[in-house]
Image (tube, rainbow, N blue to C red; front, side):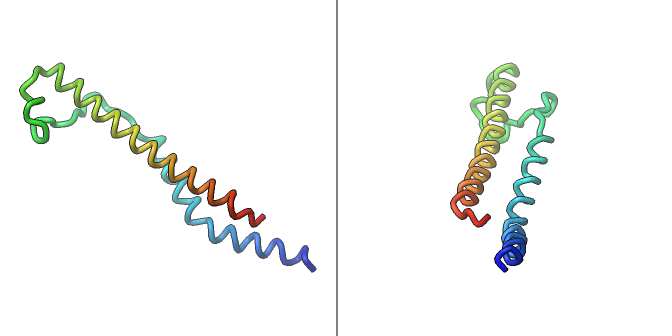
Length: 95
């Protein structure tokens, strides 16, 4: 009797977690497609006035640093959400 109920409960639980896993999988696929394009730099003239007064090499350096920090921040946020999902999944232990 219990053998008939367990697959049904497992399917139900997997249906609950399906939106979360699909969202995390799509986020991982999106992060795999992220690339730094050196030809597309940040326009610091609009946002950081004193840095725009520096030479083009310094502006490129600051733009690259800001771009790298943005990518790292995004990766840490996605990794944190994924770790939170894993902690929640291991805490429930339905199956």
